[in-house]
Length: 134
Image (cartoon, rainbow, N blue to C red):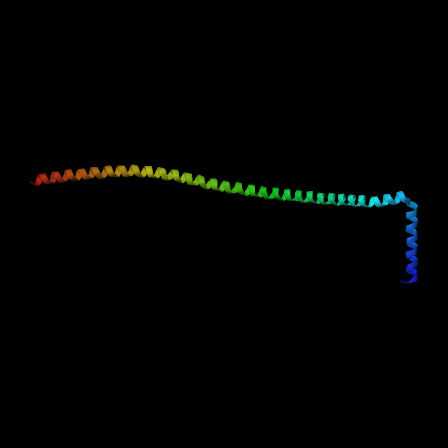
């Protein structure tokens, strides 16, 4: 160390000693006890900042979740409308098929009656023709 640095160090030490002697014993005790209190205050302040950031993050998360749920709700409603429309079409087609089957059964019954009547008429005609030959 050079002599200028030593002089600066001695001057700084003398200044600190003068301040400490001016404080006296009660001032030194207050200074010693204020250190932990300042640490506690600093910790509380940093905890406050952390809580504030956490609340902001939670608010952003809630807004994002709300947006996603709204989009999901809209998509689900769209899908349900499409499925409902397709279901209505299937029900209409089923009813048309039931009506078609009923009409087909009526036609089949009529055709059966016609065939039976024609068969009887042919049998009768055959009987008439056979009886005339004799």
